[in-house]
Amino acid sequence: MNPVEKARIKDAPQMRELINSFADRGDMLPRPLSEIYESIKDFFVVRRGERVIACVALHISWSDLAEIRSLVVLEGNQKQRIGNQLVDACLNEARELGISTVFCLTNKPAFFEKCGFSLIDKAEMPHKVWSECYRCPKFPDCDEAALVYRLEVGA
Image (cartoon, rainbow, N blue to C red; front, side):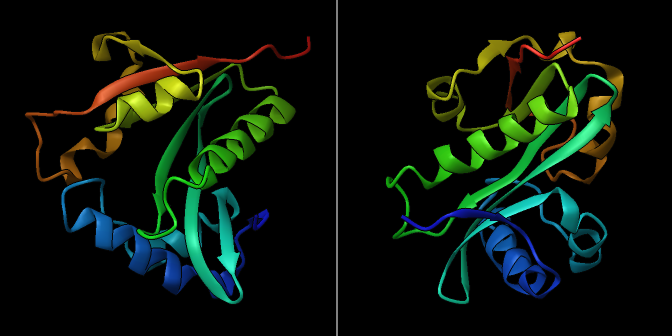
Protein backbone atom coordinates (compact mmCIF):
# COMPACT_ATOMS: atom_id res chain seq x y z
CA MET A 1 0.00 0.00 0.00
CA ASN A 2 1.40 3.36 -1.00
CA PRO A 3 1.58 6.01 1.72
CA VAL A 4 -0.42 9.22 1.83
CA GLU A 5 1.92 12.20 1.59
CA LYS A 6 1.62 15.96 1.42
CA ALA A 7 1.58 17.16 -2.18
CA ARG A 8 4.64 18.74 -3.72
CA ILE A 9 4.79 21.49 -6.33
CA LYS A 10 5.83 19.03 -9.02
CA ASP A 11 2.62 17.03 -8.39
CA ALA A 12 0.32 19.91 -9.39
CA PRO A 13 0.09 19.22 -13.16
CA GLN A 14 -0.75 15.55 -12.56
CA MET A 15 -3.28 16.49 -9.88
CA ARG A 16 -5.00 18.92 -12.27
CA GLU A 17 -5.15 16.25 -14.96
CA LEU A 18 -6.62 13.74 -12.51
CA ILE A 19 -9.16 16.14 -10.98
CA ASN A 20 -10.26 17.58 -14.30
CA SER A 21 -10.71 14.15 -15.89
CA PHE A 22 -13.37 13.47 -13.25
CA ALA A 23 -14.74 17.02 -13.55
CA ASP A 24 -15.22 16.48 -17.28
CA ARG A 25 -17.67 13.70 -16.37
CA GLY A 26 -19.54 15.97 -13.94
CA ASP A 27 -18.22 14.21 -10.83
CA MET A 28 -16.65 17.32 -9.29
CA LEU A 29 -15.64 20.90 -9.92
CA PRO A 30 -12.66 21.44 -12.20
CA ARG A 31 -9.57 23.04 -10.69
CA PRO A 32 -7.30 25.30 -12.74
CA LEU A 33 -3.58 24.72 -12.33
CA SER A 34 -3.13 28.16 -10.75
CA GLU A 35 -5.61 27.26 -7.99
CA ILE A 36 -3.85 23.96 -7.30
CA TYR A 37 -0.52 25.76 -6.97
CA GLU A 38 -2.08 28.37 -4.66
CA SER A 39 -3.59 25.69 -2.44
CA ILE A 40 -0.87 23.01 -2.74
CA LYS A 41 -0.48 22.94 1.05
CA ASP A 42 -4.12 21.78 1.31
CA PHE A 43 -3.46 18.63 -0.72
CA PHE A 44 -2.48 15.08 0.08
CA VAL A 45 -1.48 12.63 -2.64
CA VAL A 46 -0.80 8.95 -3.16
CA ARG A 47 1.85 8.10 -5.72
CA ARG A 48 2.90 4.98 -7.56
CA GLY A 49 6.48 5.74 -8.39
CA GLU A 50 6.40 9.31 -9.69
CA ARG A 51 2.76 9.05 -10.85
CA VAL A 52 0.05 10.69 -8.73
CA ILE A 53 -2.78 8.15 -8.58
CA ALA A 54 -4.96 9.91 -5.99
CA CYS A 55 -5.39 13.24 -4.26
CA VAL A 56 -7.58 15.17 -1.87
CA ALA A 57 -7.60 18.63 -0.30
CA LEU A 58 -8.55 19.79 3.17
CA HIS A 59 -9.63 23.39 2.68
CA ILE A 60 -10.09 25.47 5.82
CA SER A 61 -13.26 27.57 5.65
CA TRP A 62 -13.39 29.03 9.15
CA SER A 63 -11.97 28.56 12.65
CA ASP A 64 -14.07 25.47 13.26
CA LEU A 65 -14.90 24.32 9.72
CA ALA A 66 -12.98 22.66 6.89
CA GLU A 67 -14.00 21.01 3.64
CA ILE A 68 -12.75 17.84 2.03
CA ARG A 69 -12.64 18.58 -1.68
CA SER A 70 -11.20 17.22 -4.91
CA LEU A 71 -11.05 13.61 -3.69
CA VAL A 72 -10.00 11.54 -6.69
CA VAL A 73 -8.59 8.04 -7.09
CA LEU A 74 -7.45 7.02 -10.57
CA GLU A 75 -9.65 4.33 -12.06
CA GLY A 76 -7.94 0.98 -11.80
CA ASN A 77 -6.74 1.98 -8.31
CA GLN A 78 -10.19 2.30 -6.76
CA LYS A 79 -11.63 -0.21 -4.29
CA GLN A 80 -8.22 -0.46 -2.57
CA ARG A 81 -9.05 1.81 0.40
CA ILE A 82 -6.92 4.64 -1.03
CA GLY A 83 -9.87 7.04 -0.78
CA ASN A 84 -10.37 6.00 2.85
CA GLN A 85 -6.69 6.68 3.60
CA LEU A 86 -6.96 10.14 2.04
CA VAL A 87 -10.07 10.98 4.06
CA ASP A 88 -8.34 9.76 7.23
CA ALA A 89 -5.35 12.01 6.47
CA CYS A 90 -7.69 15.00 6.16
CA LEU A 91 -9.52 14.17 9.38
CA ASN A 92 -6.24 13.72 11.25
CA GLU A 93 -4.96 17.07 10.00
CA ALA A 94 -8.24 18.78 10.95
CA ARG A 95 -7.98 17.25 14.43
CA GLU A 96 -4.36 18.44 14.76
CA LEU A 97 -5.41 21.94 13.72
CA GLY A 98 -8.27 21.99 16.25
CA ILE A 99 -11.04 22.07 13.65
CA SER A 100 -14.24 20.52 15.01
CA THR A 101 -16.30 20.04 11.84
CA VAL A 102 -15.28 18.70 8.43
CA PHE A 103 -17.83 18.71 5.63
CA CYS A 104 -18.03 17.63 2.03
CA LEU A 105 -20.38 18.18 -0.88
CA THR A 106 -20.53 15.09 -3.05
CA ASN A 107 -22.54 12.96 -5.41
CA LYS A 108 -21.05 9.88 -3.70
CA PRO A 109 -22.56 10.16 -0.21
CA ALA A 110 -22.40 6.41 0.50
CA PHE A 111 -18.59 6.49 0.41
CA PHE A 112 -18.43 9.31 2.95
CA GLU A 113 -21.05 7.68 5.16
CA LYS A 114 -18.80 4.59 5.30
CA CYS A 115 -16.04 6.95 6.47
CA GLY A 116 -18.21 8.13 9.38
CA PHE A 117 -19.77 11.24 7.85
CA SER A 118 -23.46 12.02 8.40
CA LEU A 119 -25.88 13.42 5.85
CA ILE A 120 -27.29 16.84 6.67
CA ASP A 121 -29.63 19.25 4.96
CA LYS A 122 -27.60 21.62 2.77
CA ALA A 123 -29.57 24.51 4.27
CA GLU A 124 -27.79 23.82 7.60
CA MET A 125 -24.39 24.66 6.07
CA PRO A 126 -22.99 28.16 6.63
CA HIS A 127 -23.43 30.56 3.72
CA LYS A 128 -19.64 30.72 3.23
CA VAL A 129 -19.70 27.06 2.11
CA TRP A 130 -21.46 28.01 -1.12
CA SER A 131 -18.80 30.46 -2.32
CA GLU A 132 -17.71 28.20 -5.21
CA CYS A 133 -21.17 27.17 -6.38
CA TYR A 134 -21.33 29.79 -9.10
CA ARG A 135 -18.52 27.92 -10.91
CA CYS A 136 -20.48 24.69 -11.03
CA PRO A 137 -22.21 23.84 -14.30
CA LYS A 138 -25.14 22.50 -12.25
CA PHE A 139 -25.70 25.81 -10.45
CA PRO A 140 -28.28 26.58 -9.14
CA ASP A 141 -29.73 23.05 -9.37
CA CYS A 142 -27.22 21.31 -7.12
CA ASP A 143 -27.53 17.53 -6.96
CA GLU A 144 -24.77 17.04 -4.39
CA ALA A 145 -25.34 15.82 -0.87
CA ALA A 146 -23.88 17.61 2.16
CA LEU A 147 -22.22 15.50 4.82
CA VAL A 148 -20.38 16.38 8.03
CA TYR A 149 -17.94 14.71 10.37
CA ARG A 150 -17.72 16.03 13.93
CA LEU A 151 -14.29 15.77 15.54
CA GLU A 152 -13.37 15.68 19.19
CA VAL A 153 -10.77 18.39 19.57
CA GLY A 154 -8.84 19.49 22.63
CA ALA A 155 -9.76 22.66 24.45
